[in-house]
Amino acid sequence: MSTQATAGPPGGRADPSNRRFDGPWLRVLAAATGVWTILYAIDWGLLTAGTQAAAAVGFAHSYLVAPLVTAAVLLDALSLGERGVLDFGVFTWIYALVALLAPPVVVAYYAHREWLKPDDSSLLADPEDDA
Image (cartoon, rainbow, N blue to C red):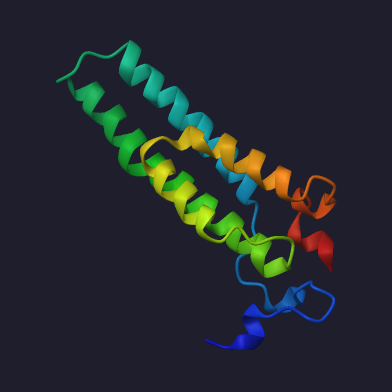
């Protein structure tokens, strides 16, 4: 791995052409968490265990949407680190592992993200706007 791709310039911001993890991760995170919550509520409240519908909905929220939320947490944290905005360190992995079981933990992830840099407008900006 090249140190040039991970190390930012002296000003603290990475060169936009070197960024590998840019993306709309907050939107993906919000959408996937919303879908997981809806599917989990349907599974828990409306479907009878042992039916095909319950199995399909359970599979969807456990094996499709929850890993998507986890991936979005990791990619958002990598994007922020790569842009030189902030670095979560071990907390990234804690949020990601908990999100595999309960994706609504991303609310705590987002609050932590805002708490670390509350006045930094680049937290919510699209990475393309940094150029």
